[in-house]
Image (cartoon, rainbow, N blue to C red; front, side, top):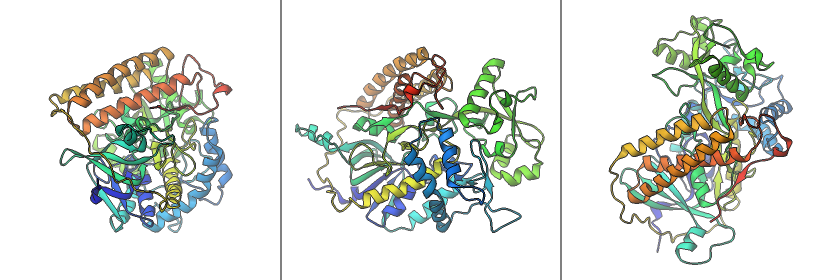
Length: 540
């Protein structure tokens, strides 16, 4: 069978955040690129990044300091070569973004210099930012450049369903699967038609972001359902360190804005965390107080919420005038004002919320996974940079650095890679139109609730075992629904969400210690025997 050339490209990139678009722009120099998003191109986790991108930039900063800060935050699990590569390449990647048209904020008193923020865990001011909408500015510039590139096509409302591997094709043909499997394409739902298409590519790039929607409280948009990780797992790729879910200490606590992030940069500018009484509590938990790494601050807030039986704590920024706050954080100022909060005169109600997944599809220093021709970059990947806890603003940096490395890896192999043109069509069988969407919504809410209660900031073995039993039942229910009814985006996301929930629990149960973002009350100490990655793989 000759494959439809319209469903073919050298590179198939899933995701339109900073990682996916950065890869696409550079890959277009070497071949044809198709970029897909299940929503619209501007919607991604990257878009909601407020704080900035960390890079050695100031005169008083240096590479060794940034490396050391990353190691300290990572609690002994950072991969040294991944850290060194990212920090050393970082300034060059930032210069490329500037050349592309990214407008980072400049100092008011010295317009020829960039304004640098300092965030928790950083020894120096090294966070370049675009006011408090850095992610949106990066996505804007990258998207404009990608649209102008003739070798790139961007498709909206296309949701990847599963990866196609040579092993899968061999089993379908009743042949012996290859010992070293590789990816040759993906099944993708065109939401405009409801048809699942078989897309062929020499390289498939997973840049689908994280999985914050696993939890009741999250700073992530609705699309963050762990799609790339779930697909890679089902295809047999190695997944690592899924237990390390970063909870941002300060998400706005307000019924009308459940996912709005209050940037860590506010604490870098002197913000203090207080109880409803006005009493500060961070000095009791860490000598770095409000500038301690995120895992420490999030656990401290969680402890105070439970100890005092309160719904939220407060971030006090009243030391800044209204004009000063609006100048430093214009987007946050506008958003708070829209719900009647005025930080110059009243503290901001905040709670921790799921923010970033430090684990993911395990890769090497070029973003290559354990499956041939499958790359993973950005939050979807576990590169070894973050270890057990991500240092603030290292994520956008990682996305640009590993996108660059991944292109170099693929470009050197492109000419020797054969495009698979015999891809079987997707079989719907006797699947019918969905009859009751409330089932999907209810199951989604159930997963988010028990993950928050049982596999959240503070965990116990019994709670996690309870969560895994419930997840197994949910997965069984989803599989029946999955094969009985035609695919919809909601069903694809629910299936992926349940898969990723199980991966988080599996990894968390294997780590019988507390380290970084994983705190188990049954094993409260750090154990040197577990100073290693938690790697799991599905064998088929």
